Image 1 (tube, rainbow, N blue to C red):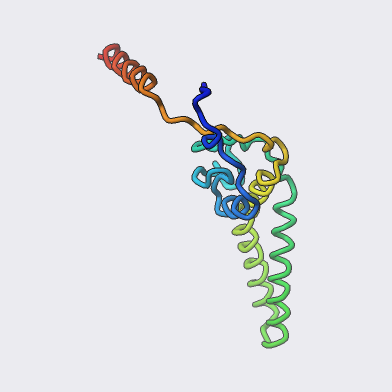
Image 2: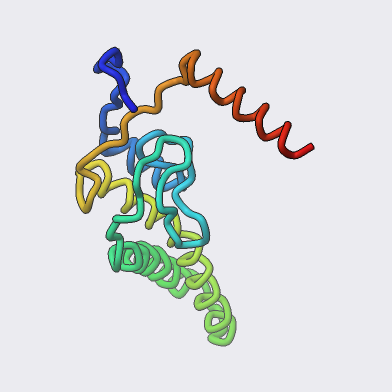
Length: 159
C-alpha cells in the first residue's frame, strides 16, 4: 500500500490543540480541517471522508452537555439578573422568554461543543486517537492505468 519512496513529509503531523478545538467547533475534522465530523445532529461519523481519520472511537459522553450547561447557565443567569435589576418586566413575560431562550441557546451550542471535545481528544491523543492516518498518496501511473482499464471493462459489460 505504501512504498519506501514515501518520505517522512508525506506522513502528517498531529494538529495542535487550539486549531483542533477550532476545527471541531465548526464541525470539521480535527486532523485535516476539510471533512465533516457529524453525519447527523450529534452522531459522529465513523471516519473522515477526506483524510481517513477514524472518529468512531471518540468518547465525548457527558462532557459536552456539562460544558453547555455551564456556559448557558452563566450567560442566562447574568441576563436574568441584569433584566431584574434594570427593568420592571412582568413575571409572565420572563416565564415565557427565558426558558425558550435557554433551550434554543443550549441546542445551538451542543453540536459545536461536542465537536470541540472530539478535537480535544484528538489533539491529546486520547481514546484511540494515538495513531494518525497516513496520508493518501496520489495515484501513480500504474494505478491510473488499472482504473481506466477497469472502467472500460465495466462499459463493455453494461452494453
